[in-house]
Image (cartoon, rainbow, N blue to C red):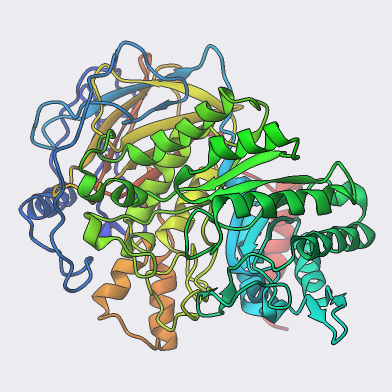
Length: 629
């Protein structure tokens, strides 16, 4: 009897599964090794094929791309040939791998073999260490706190970072007519109390400059944060000292020693800091002196720079001048490559390599510095992309809202998993007001969730990664894998989990599906429950559904329900697998941008029964079925 794929959304599915070669149709077929498998073309595969061909020819899909989106062109990708005889422990991904010869996307499935690792470790998931929200004042809103609490139950963050702790809306410092300063912490207390109640500690960002202390009037963003140096650095030091002293009194020294204190935000950009690099170092020293005067165990660091700048300078300054430095922090976005290398001219990185390579470069800088012991915290990043330099935008970037974000997040988080203590996604919610809070259901704003609390593809990517508990397994393929594609796997007891992704690079005018034939040799001839979750257009990625609706600004209740339904990944029971002496085999077909998660467990025999014996049940059945008296 032929096995079938059971799914709640067959008609809308983009992914096709096909039995590997040698499948006998009874569920007990055998398969040896990881030979290339030819997969039959399904209607869904044909649809993916047509979409890929259309994109390769520059044809725009009306249901998934914004109006007036220009075609995406980029220079030829730089590639290097890998040594495919050396599989990576725990993952097999595209970093540095040559795409290989062009073949029809459905002609073959690339073989992957997943086995226990001889030196197992676990995914560290530094993305869980911290998440950001836009600014402090927004955490006084009930709707943002509700979204945060919902995300916290599923994703389990440890810290939260945000701008504008000392902004005028927070009302922290006031200067009297005689010049004396009064410090007020009521607003901050409410925010920290709420976070701590959810099990989240503050990753404190010390900024902006309170108007009472500022040397100038330069401002940034809709809420007009003051970005000038203090008129008197001793007053800034006093502010930090009094702030830390209050925190210790309110929350206890043991608790506050677990927090992080980061000085300013992106001082290497003129928009965020009107002063010089030397003035920033002076501000940093004043901050460190103020904090450490309360307790030497409180942790301080920086420079919170954009694009991994000032790292070596920061370490050298603090080391040479005896200034405390407990960690390094910096920021990076994929489209920063178009800032550093406009239209990628002169870029030493292959397409899609900039982000993971820069993450690893900071680890190397610190390791080779005077302070190799420093923790590394990336306190901002997200999926903002740009196909060319003239398309770089920080406030209206569709690649944080659409399907593209899912595979981008999974690929980069897996590949940089061991390279930092923190990878703080910017930001949790579209309740975010750098340019005032958006009105539309989708606004190409940074959030993992919309203003209505609808989960984007980006949120769902993190939710699936959160399930990857257990020891990493070894994933190997005899063939080079195309850039942007990859598989990782873990085992926890008798449960095996597999995560696959297919990142689509916006710099390239093509999109290639990912068809993988996966074999787990140690899972022998038995029955399994294989559950699959897929993030795809209209199932886990609601952006495309909203576009197909015509981008309504004000949703009816039914329209909102539709988008909420489209925000749920496609869950299905996989039955077209083989399990025999050669192990368990299944196929995974991913369209560009998609992510798939598999959970494989042995099927238990029997089913739950009541503790009441059958004879007593028969008495009950008869009594309850009697005619009325």
